[in-house]
Image (cartoon, rainbow, N blue to C red):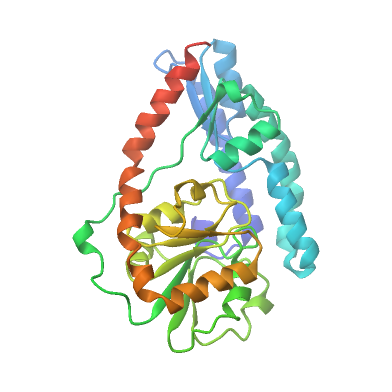
Amino acid sequence: VLASRAGLGPVATDWLHDKATARLGRTCARLMGQPEFGGFFGVEYGAMAGLEAARLLGKPSVVAFLSPHHLFRDRWMIREYEKHPDLLTAAARKLLALGRARDALRDCEMLAGTIVHAASRLTARTLAEAGASPEKMVTVPLGAPAAIAMEDLPARPLATCRVLYAGTLSVQKGAHILLEAWRSVRGEGRAELHLAGENLLPARLLADLPENVHLHGNIPPRDLFAMYERSSVLAFPTLCDGFGMVVTEAFSRGLPVITTVNAGASDLVAEGRNGFLVPPADADALAERLQWCIDNPSALHDMREAALLTAGQNSWAHFRDEFKRQFVARLKPC
């Protein structure tokens, strides 16, 4: 996080993250030998040492996959790079090359764990297609932050429709699709697009943006949650995402969302009630939905209560209870 904020660039930041992940893995493997630890829980790419230590000691292990299988991810990313070759920057090319060896390790982790946790039905399906055993899979969507009170929702629609994008401005997150869609909506004087997050897109995509587009860069979580409350809708047009925490964060502030069927958090989206689903990599479909939000502020505002209720029904307490239930059910046969 500090490296990213210091502007070291994606490759240097990735290198530091990789070293820290390896160090954590070695520490976990060493600790597994202590009697007070009865099992191991690790996250994909960083879990192999702990998984192997648990196996040798006869202890159960869980590996959590927060992302869809890499073959599914690659299909969408390669397709997009083929359509837009200039999106494949030098940094993106370097990280893709590094990712091939890392993905092979993820495949080993997928097979090594006693139990595999998938953060969404999308992730579970792609792992099963790649060879993970459904018999050892638990699928539990990630939880939402504590929701604000219903009485704290705004009483009326905002005078200007404020569309918020939160997250890294990258190809995988579909930020370029959002910028393309926004250029075709009719919202002069009635709508604004606010983008919060580090930019990884080529500079040309941010050139000559409409005046109603505002770039905020990285902002602290407290400020981001305040932006959720001051917005009309969240746009998260990801090409491929194992979950998408920004969706549940938005729900916790009573903010409806527009996302794609390739977001794991789409499990929680009830079409037309707390948000909308659009096809991934489809700027026209996204523009059409954005235009509806701009043209129907009252109907969009009426979705806030359902968004807030969704967060309350999918809290971290609910996640823990459901994970424990499925974990115990899967562990018994082992």
